[in-house]
Length: 114
Length: 114
Image 1 (cartoon, rainbow over the protein chains, first blue to last red):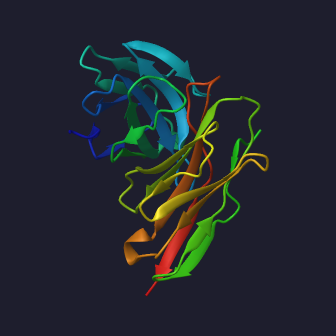
Image 2 (image 1 turned 135 degrees about the vertical axis):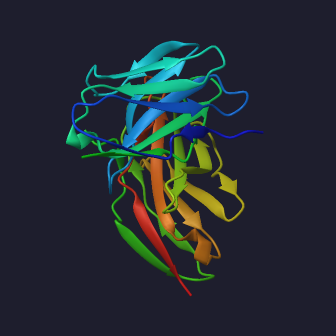
């Protein structure tokens, strides 16, 4: 069974740039959620994709956008990067959107904004 | 409003002893799931244990058990026979039937002493 994989592992960008983070879901999982984890805090929900459609969004501005592909992999795009976007970005996959489904996380992408 | 509260920023335990990490939650949904994750310094969130709101018995997974007290809205994690490799951040999280996101607490940093 292949787990959740994320790329790249680390990324350094400057203010105003755009970034794309990638996630391959665990085999058999059709739902992907993205989280932002600032240093010293718990993860914050960005959005979820289910069957290629956005299925819920947290309190993040529209410059955070995403995609899910037919193979259930996903991208997170962030435009007009700000210093506060520096964080660990975690992708999690699950089978379905049920409240009783555990989410399985990747190792994350550590994004630094200079 | 804070949905998940972890009141212990840091905990210390002697190797081979048991430790309890506290978690309280707030919800008005009748159906919800409670989850515990371990996050080593490498950043990966590792799923440990799940408890459903309708489950009559406390969940157990190896050395991990969940002390679920529904009336008190608490879901404490008990780790028995602590090992040095248990040193990490531990997050309590909840998914509700009314939402698509997983809400996390601020975490507890556990340090196991030799």
